[in-house]
Length: 299
Image 1 (cartoon, rainbow, N blue to C red):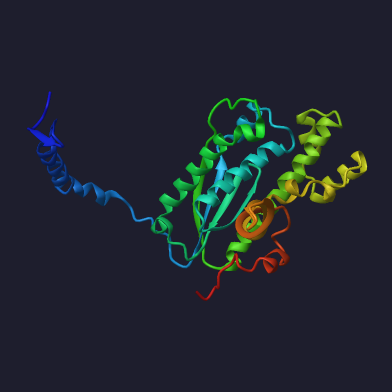
Image 2: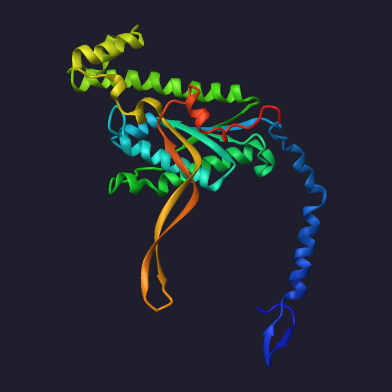
């Protein structure tokens, strides 16, 4: 059924619905500004305090079960860690106000600049955007790391937003996460070594490690299995730190000479990209080498 009257364009007659539809949109617009608009008053103000670093931390939801069902290698699966890092890089490339991110195991923390105005600093917007970008990237890049191994069901990540007002507070937060990485990785390394190489059951390995300190765990690895924990992969011991860096990249470009001949010429350009580090971020060296990450406390 045609609505409205016929209009002539370029000698052809077409049905014209402009006038009736205009009425509909006008009515709809009026309704949006009518008595129903009061429901917006139920929204809470979640604007993050100014001059604070905004940290969005994601944690895998029920990832112990997810790792079991997808047969992750124990104690650490480089494929899974690589996928987490690739997903985090995707977040940073989408949200350039994230100045640094740190991840280990099934978690990643993203630090927004204290001067960031993304999404008007609304905590809900920042958290949901980070979580959705990370989760979709995890699914999107799955095959890049796991090949033909199927993804059995979508992974889930929960998130939280925490504000840190000073550089010291932020550094202590990141130090806390890296210390947690060390504690967990040392335990898992010893635990699965006792199971896989020592022939213990998981229950026996758990009993063996009850009440042990870091020095005890290092001694078990070294004296019983000739493993020096300090030479284990830094990726596993230190986690992954992502930062923006400018680096020179050389590419080959085909150019045409005045004589008409073509040849390949190397062209070097400086590009700002996200790069991964697997070193210590608790001490001073990392921060001295990358002074642009932290902003002036006096801002």
